[in-house]
Amino acid sequence: MMDRRGFLATAAALPASVASVFPLRPARPPVAPRAGSAERFGLSLSQWSYHRSIFGDSRADYDRYLHLLATDPDAVLQGDMDPRDIVVRARELDLDTVDLVNVLFYGHAADGPWLAEFGRRARAERVGFGILMIDEAGSIGASDAAERAAAIARHRLWLDCAATLGCTAIRVNAYGDGTYLAQLRQCAESLAVLGDLGAEAGLDVLVENHGHPSSNGAWLAMLMEATAHPRVGVLADFDNFFMGGWNHDPQRRYDSVQGMLDLAPYTRAVSAKSYDFRADGRETRVDFHQAMQIVLDAGFDGLASAEYEGEHLSEADGTRATVALLRTVRQDLRTH
Image (cartoon, rainbow, N blue to C red; front, side, top):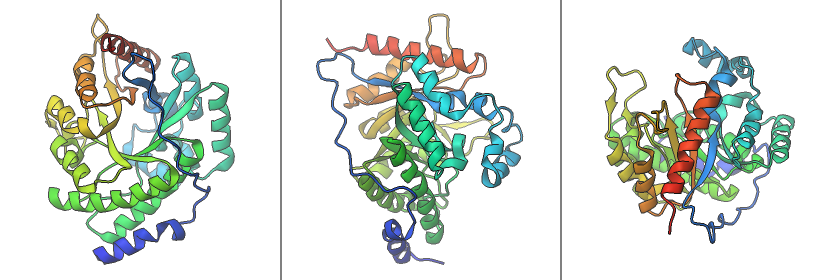
């Protein structure tokens, strides 16, 4: 079993030992503030809003879905939407940025022609790429150091993909094993390495509250303090404050308002999660105005990504309603 010293040595050597499919670009300058604008945050579209249109029924048998993802990833793309056409959906909504999810094109991380076509379509629609969310790439908080190093190598492949597409950040999951404190230490070590890799590529590395300890707002805030890397921050999801796995019944939840307060000082992007809407256009589970006010009060001025995950509306209608609500919130919270 690899010890901590071995892990750090292996991780430090990753830029040289893990073959990079595409050369990393130099770090880009920070995004310019919205000078002269009263709008306090921007908007983007999450590719996950259309995951059913892309996956079709392939996730109905989840174990089989995971098997196909590992062995024949294009076989999970059983829907009628090409994942690259998310840029068309964004332009239809008058949005300039899309946030990507790697499992929606899992077999193409190093597929130069496929990615080049994605970039061509994006340019044709005048749409750019924001965050690339990375799932199914190993546990950066694993107790076994060799497993953590392998996870970093797998994340490096997607980090290179994000750099090639011109993304601004990657999102990783703080998953691991052991006690809360052990997982915090293990994740912090890995995030320090990923932060250095992100810095080389001009990318931020964001951790989302996305289940297990990361959905405990206090724990994730402590992880940010323990990591203390200038390229590492939080992607704050409005509703992902369920602790443990996804299948707890009833769910064990962390208070969502407290969670947003915990995460606000470290938040560099927001996932505006929606499920359903009232007659007045407001979301039924989450107070979008309150959630956005919390992060704005902490100095947030980035992008809020519309992510519809409901079932009562079509993906197109639900996403449209989410974007409309975010625009209402932005108008209501404008500076004067």
